[in-house]
Structures are given as structure tokens and as C-alpha cells.
Length: 165
Picture (cartoon, rainbow, N blue to C red):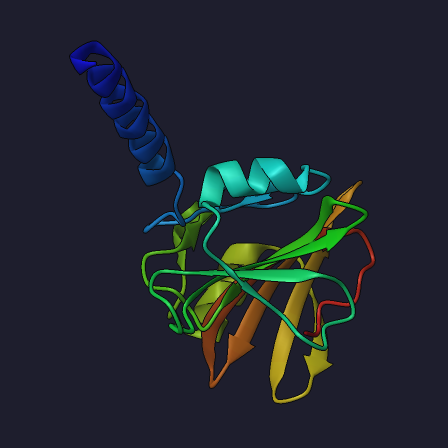
């Protein structure tokens, strides 16, 4: 009986440790054309859950199934992941989560002029109340969101996708 209890405790501990490692990164990174917060386009939904955890909100009324991963329940700061047929179709930061960055010193919160100089060639697209600076690679569209004169967020979508959300 004691042996069974010890085994059960070890299994529970292992499950807790595995779940604890799956979480939204505190300092997420955009890899232009590659990944956002470790999430890649085409990645299976199950893989997203293993990486970010199973605790997330679900958008009601979004065009695609969209999961919101935040640092605390009902917190607005985090990462949205859009799915299409069970695979990642897009990912974008929500409400400028602190500590997120991209190469060349791009960090959320810097002034838009500085961001434009660091992103390289982008195409500005006006969205409702904010601007998206987009750069297309062979397979992906990298998006730099500007709001109130500052870099507010990052996005990663299929090449040519509408960046406005």
C-alpha cells in the first residue's frame, strides 16, 4: 500500500512539473518570418498547449478559433494564437506585454520612428485605431503594430494575410 502511494505521489509530482514548465514566456521573442513566443505557423494545436499550457481564453466572435494566453486570468497582456484546421494560422501579442522583443534592439514600447528604422523595409497598413507595419518573407508576414506613436505589438501570419485584428 505504501509503495502504491509513493508511486501515485511521484506520478502526480511529474505531472505537476510538466504542467509548470508550460507557460507563456515572460520575455517572448519575435523571430521575423519564423516564430513568436516560440510559436510557429503550421504548428499543431496540441504542440501550442504543451508549450503555453492549457489555461487560455477562447475568443467568441473571431473569424478563426483564437486562443488567448495571458499571465493571469482576465489579464489583457499576452499572446493570441489563431488556428485553422487544428494548426497555427497566426500569432500576435495582445496589449503590449512587457519584456517582449525582436532582433536589432526592437522592444515593445519604443517610439515608432525608432522601430521603423530597426525593422527594415515595411509596408504601412492602417487598421482601425492603429497601424501595422508589415514585412513579407517567402512564407510569412511579420507585423509590427504601432499605437499612440509607440511599438505596441508583434504579429506573425501567412504571407499576405490581413494584419488588422
